[in-house]
Length: 286
Image 1 (cartoon, rainbow, N blue to C red):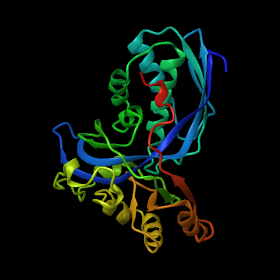
Image 2: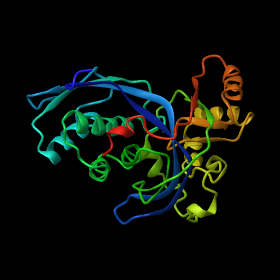
Image 3: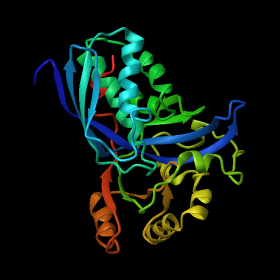
């Protein structure tokens, strides 16, 4: 591979093993607690260095403009922060569903920061990349953190959290859930009692702990999500990730997970995924 390109860079999805809303700041941002789990379902990005400073991403994606494209915004923010004169051609192979609660856009942005920090020879430390990433979204710092984590604040206060090796069945109902719509719902619970990381054993199955405060609101608004959750709950404890629409359940091995996935009703979308212990591009974090 040339020093002027990075190909097949992975942008993994995440699952929220629980998601508690514990308060709301004066600026409107919600304070939360969650455990983030990386999984091996990924978008893939190719990066080609340019010498003219231009940033260009292909292919076009319906509903994704230059202004709301986190990949382009991440690259330009890194340029501005570092004073770098390089640019990039970026090719995205989109595999993660949009509006699924899997953090695909945030992960794409984090992978862009990690890859271009390397490709542009910037050598910015992880702490600075996380500071840049927070300007793009509350989930971006986690993907830059590089490993599974217990998160607090708006998602930027991160502590490494060891999780057991496990498999998940993830179902994607055919709806796009608006995160802003769910967080602004007046019926959303915003006063869940905070927990401490010591309240559950490090290395234990955090999936069995807690709940998702956003889930009740989403199920009321999107019956397709409720239907998927009900179906999966027959086979294992199931939850929604993030603000939905994806729901998931944990299994000890891939055999059990695939057995459940094989029973998926015709026309439904689902996937068997493996939990990761660290980000595939962690080696690019200084």
